[in-house]
Length: 187
Image 1 (cartoon, rainbow, N blue to C red):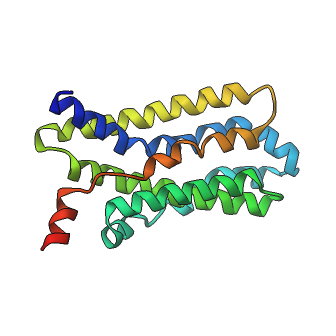
Image 2: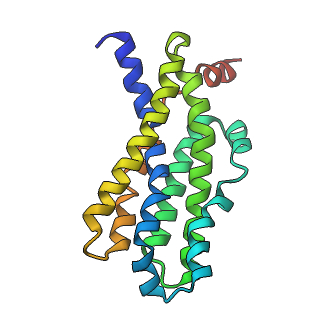
């Protein structure tokens, strides 16, 4: 494999955590009628389930500086998986809100961490391609989320639809270290 192709493959692997982040927004709106029926939600509760994701998404950038990007990406994958589990097994509305806030933490953190990590691990001549690849992975994640949503549309199984979202969260582990992180460890 040519060096440029190898680097683009690495870039796709690093950007992959944003595909589950993209899955958080669209499918919920499509399955809201099923969730409403299961939990007997009023309009305020429905809108809060959609919008509470933003609360968790705030303030994620500072932790990346403290922990390092690679460790933070692995933690984000675990947090995303945990938030998904909370949603899948939520017995009531309050638990559903907590799950969405936890997912918001993962989404906000990945949105802040992945582009920075990509720019640190990419060779200077490929940096623009990597960051473009990041946007492409988000778009692919949105497409995949709607295809998964379509697969579960007639069944009313919104919990299973969210459970599928945990699969790509494992992509957050095993990231390459950035040059900056390797220099910090050496010096």
